[in-house]
Amino acid sequence: MSRRLEDEEWLIHQSLPKLLASQRRDPFIKTCITYSGAACVGFTLLLIGVFVCVIAYDVRRTDGHAVAVFPVKVRSLRRGPVPILCHVNVARFYDNDVRYRTVDLPGNYCSHLVLPLRGFFSGTNETPDASLAFGLVQSRLIELRNEVNKSFPHLKYLISVGDENGGGSRLTFHETPNVTAYMTFIVEMVRWVLHNRFHGIVLNRVFPIEKEHQRHMRVFLSHLKQVMHKHGLLFVVTASSHTGIFKSGARPGRLSRFLDYVGVMTQGLHHPANATDRILIPLHHQRERKGRSVEDFIENVISSGLPRSRVLLAVSLSGFVCTMSRLPENKEVPRWIDTHAVRVLSYKEACQLIRQTDWTLSYDRESEKPHAWRNNVWIGYEDEISVRKMASLVDKMFLGGVIHFGCWKR
Image 1 (cartoon, rainbow, N blue to C red):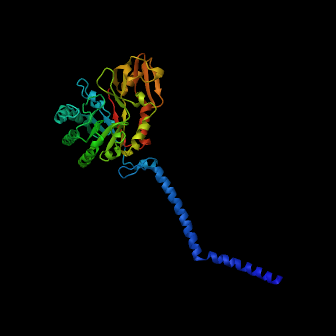
Image 2: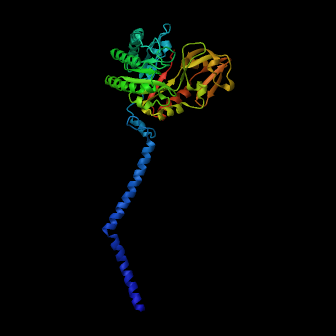
Image 3: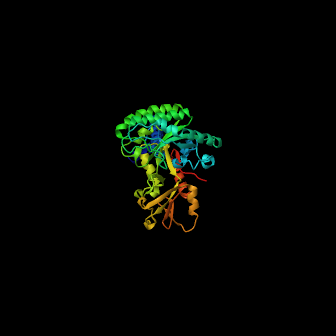
């Protein structure tokens, strides 16, 4: 009996290695193992790819293309430097006593020079007199373009109309506009630009986006874009970051398909207490918006559907000085109702004033912009740190470029 058990155990031990070996040599088992391993590796790579795509691209698509927002390598995919549009100050441009000179303009620091056009409406709903608007400034625009072109042949020139710095324009829509008249005026602008060899138009804060007009504007803009792109013209619109084209329900992503760029105004136009001209001031000078930075405003605009690559960050280097009837508390920015004798300053003028003695300097850590006061005089201005902060947002947020508002003076 014991002999039989020993024989059975010996047979089992002898057959076990052969059985295992036959299993390893089985083609079916080997195929299953191979495919299982390949499936695991493929699924892992798929998960990694999905993770990278989610991080690397903005999923908000308005024109059928995803816009890179994360990897630094994507930055190298740009075809060249971002456009920098320099908008000439309206008030000084039309001041007969203060003439622009070529050396006064930042030709070496920008790619496009925007020259303002004074357009006049006889009333909010009236048809604009395009011949009057262009006739008054035609010689001035062409004269300055020819002068600047001698020193800065690389520059391209655009004309702008609307509610610009200095209040020089009267083309505004505070009520429901006559959309047909508005479209007619834009067509006249494009004809003038083509005839005089300019490179595009800029509409400043006068873009009608009322719900009942959006459908007509989209049809009009789709045809206009075809004409402008056929001739290589730029079409730019600027708007405040919290109103206008970006206000709730406007869906700027749909309208942006027909525009080359949308300039986001992070500043505001304010009426000084003793003047009719409105002044473009930096974001930190608006107390009612305290708690929100420029970055917050830009992200809010992008979340509304506007592609990052079409966003121009508006930067104002113009400071201002005013006399206060009531001193601000806790080193805060004075209220506009308490200010008078407001005067716009160029960047250089503000720096020269601050270098004088007895100024109390303060810094808004939230928006990283400086201001100062002495007795009852208050100055709001930009310094190197605040300008670099604004410029860094273009790279950091992958924006399309910059439109610069300022007044230059030697």
